[in-house]
Image: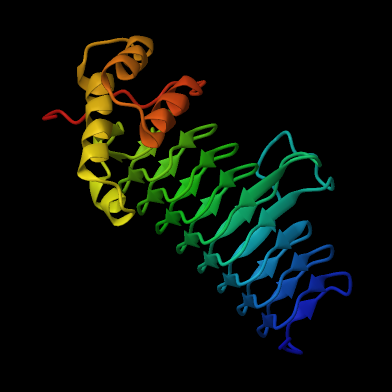
Length: 262
């Protein structure tokens, strides 16, 4: 299962049924769980811990040295990856800046060709990052979010669950959950209804989400007043609570632009 043409450092810990293809590179102090596949020319660098069922394609670099001036070369840098992720060709995932931090990838994510994830980012579960997506340092992308090809998520931005960032967007502020963003500057384009319907949300809950965002984006209220109005006018649910909690926690604000014809 390990090609004699691959390099695997003697200190690396590999689980059962791990395949390491020719010319792959596994550095020291690396842990790879069961049933992973490391394709040719992929590099798994020092400080990477990977769960089970992951597949890493050609020329991907996992655990790259952080491109951060605060990182001291030679100090520990960590990447923690969960289970069942697909990491396609030319993906770069940088490690954490400090010895006590890490870049974290959860479970079941699909990272397409040329995705770049910078230091200390946190990608939760079942996310899709399209071709050429860039995620800057200290970002957090919550469950089931989709970043379409060429999207750029700038530093410290949070992207809410079940959101959709359309191709080519440059995102500078937090993306609220269940929303679609498009254009430059990035603007609210409505509720990600198709995906939410696939997840089993009812038409009633979808209307409540749309009405909540109508208060945020077309109500001519401050963001604080819009949150109060949501509590007063929209029936409570898990999804509405998620929206309110996310907005309240936004340290740098949320995207406030909206599509011109909304």
